[in-house]
Image (tube, rainbow, N blue to C red; front, side, top):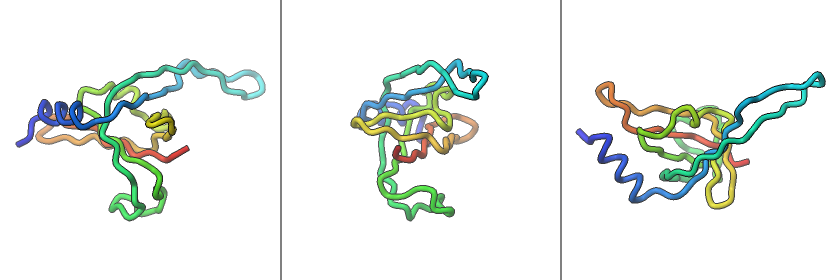
Length: 117
């Protein structure tokens, strides 16, 4: 069995620098306008291009140009949530789905499916 430590070291070695941008302290004024503070975290992830033919893409949500990012099991899961943004190579991608990959009840990695903004 592959250990989480081995997967994490592979992501460190083969991964690219990304920035996770999250909205925090979201409030709405009397007109319904949103205000928030951004919180940015720089980390590493392995990016993969979406072809549109992926098995999980049954509803056609994802198209070529979108990305899947693989993050270490030790990544802050609170930042990997839908609606947050991942910036990679000066392009922003909105997080749509986060899949936690577990083997024998041990967290191994996060698969983060994103749409290009």
